[in-house]
Length: 112
Length: 110
Image 1 (tube, rainbow over the protein chains, first blue to last red):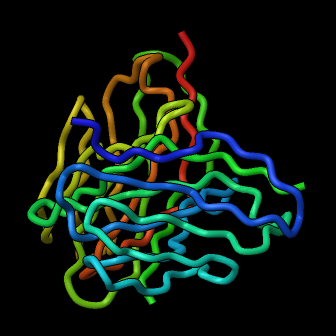
Image 2 (image 1 turned 120 degrees about the vertical axis):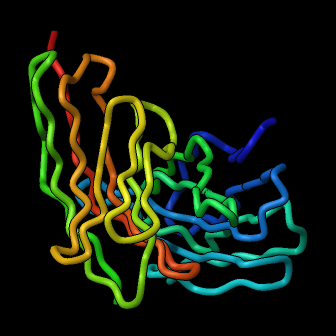
């Protein structure tokens, strides 16, 4: 099984550019989420979804959009990148019975 | 809101030393508690979990006990190896909300 797949692994943007981080899972998990990881701050929840067509904001949603048209895919969009969005981004899906999160390998984004 | 506080690192140990990473939490209701581990260049993966008070989670020689009276879930390992070098995250789940601690970097020297 592929598990949770994120692309791209690395990206450099200029301030004001837009981009989409892709996330796909093949485990049929209803719950998916996006986190950002910054030094000394752990993981902070950006957005999450409890199923297709349903999304909600997490702890740090500003500057990011998400959509969930299928169970498998949960893309994260940056509409106008800012240097403060330089971070490592992780997508994760939740196995319902155990509560275990399955993480992608991460996407390192640098905004100049 | 829910929150997790874990001891700051970095922690540097010699092989076969005893490791403890403290974790305390604030939450309403009855959260589930987790420890995740992140090896260099990888995503996080579940190390162990406990779903109710007094449960003990264990895996790969690591243990943690869910202590409701002290709102704690400290991670311990009796004899660490170089391969245990990683970042360790304490986390709690309440309904669909998951909260993570800041992470503790552990380096084990041969």
